[in-house]
Image (cartoon, rainbow, N blue to C red; front, top):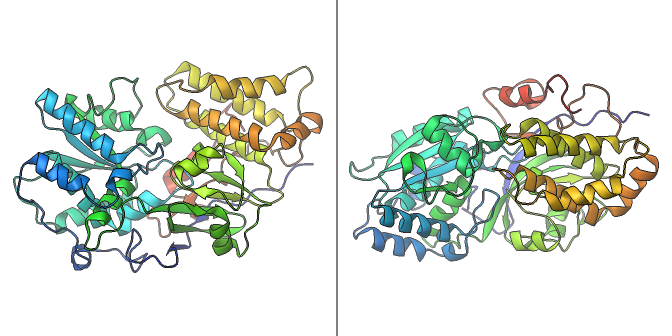
Length: 461
């Protein structure tokens, strides 16, 4: 028996602040682009070049509400202020001005938050970017973005600004639309050479970055949080986060959620029930599939305690009879196709794991799958120039830890749902698009992403 086709890629239907939140990252009218006048009416872009030297400006920035506890929103959850101070220290040691980059590449298929902010809240991002660049005395700040509509919105927003000649100059850089293009060393390499592929570490960008200068790469949502903390009555920079919620037969919604919200509360709002009978692919393709425990705390520490990663904040719901083995296989097959293509270990391991997970539909005799999967889950940590092997390890550990009985059933008798029609792209259902994409193709998938849905000859199905 062959499983029925999966749902087509889906388009975001709404952007909603959590009840009680107002004038946050999503603004008052979520799908209306906020121009300079509207943003300044909220108190934005104040004191564009405040008095004092860089140390004074950095001290004032560090005192913004909640900035000390703000974790980066790009996926790694590294403390933003620690990163900013490391670049300041590196620039002082090297005696050269630093470079600042707003990272809006967003290669994560299940997230739209970065593209949303750049399209509809560009001034919130630019305000944060300028505040950080001014605090670091950086002469140039780049907005690194792949989405064409977002590029146009940011360029328009920059044209609306009246920047002082001696302040940071803003530039928009067209990023490659690939999964690895947003990894911070790939960002630096792209800005330097035009090639968006990760590099070995060390050095890290805060040590040696664009043009050899210490470089700060911050996700655009992180910068939006910094700007929001500086608005009148500034909210705690880390008090909320953006979550793209999809799956379970519902249209995707972009929520602004309180950090630490129990998953059950979100499910009650989104599905009308706090249902622990479903699973959730948390953190996009990076975070693993966990049971949708109602008490799961939606924060980076909370998800980490339960064996996953909040990553970029996206949540894809898998309602019964969705199979967690099948979805894990789909994601690893995506990695096998969309890794950087430069580390032999990464290319070989992702392809081998994708093929092995696909075999669990009809396990082969003589293959010790029960030993292979945990060994890979342990051996892949910290391997490769980018985070793809780590992501695959998280996926495997979450599957083995949270769904051991499901894996055992596959090893014993296979799985009808995991059997696929030849030629069907495994990952084709795991994409979320923004409405009114300029390059909209069939079924709401942007043309650049629609091309990714066609597997290469000999690729993993």
